[in-house]
Length: 272
Image (cartoon, rainbow, N blue to C red; front, side, top):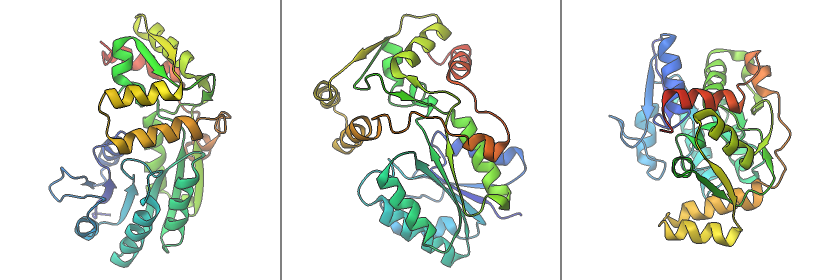
């Protein structure tokens, strides 16, 4: 129990939360990131074994997303190396309704690891800590999302699920779908944020072409443009509108809803 848990993506939205929650339980952690004392980089496999050595389990997030080319091969290679190194307990953060992500899941399952897979919907924190933050700050959330609904999930609920999976063997060999309690449109999300922080924030519908043009003008790297285009044109097609009960299955409680998230972020002053 004195061996640390490796958090791959230790500075990310879920990774840092998992680290905090494990430390609160007295469980040591090792951060796997390019900025860590022992650097980790998905694009440099020579950095993988040094961070695995001496750990007893790993929480795996793939940057930038399991949908990008080469992700499944990297996940499979990393998982096999982990098992060879003696790190059998592996938790994978996956995407809900993403065929590419499912290839990574299969690679993990075929590695011989004691695995748990957490398929998650879009994070609430995309509006407060990620690529939608600047839009919220500007008061205009402009996306090609239409009227499709998404059951946004709070990253803290994901982190609680990860901690449970890491500390309870009942979750070995299980796959959970983690979502918020209800599905809302991006326009409704913008309205709830506006209500929470008492600001004028509106949703503007873009065409796919307008969205791509906006990203290009903002000099967003090509790989992220490709990823966002895939997410909004393929994954966000209604396939994930129905909420799942994975949070209740793994934690025995309901997940936090979007408005509670928005009110907390507004109270913390993150949206100004």
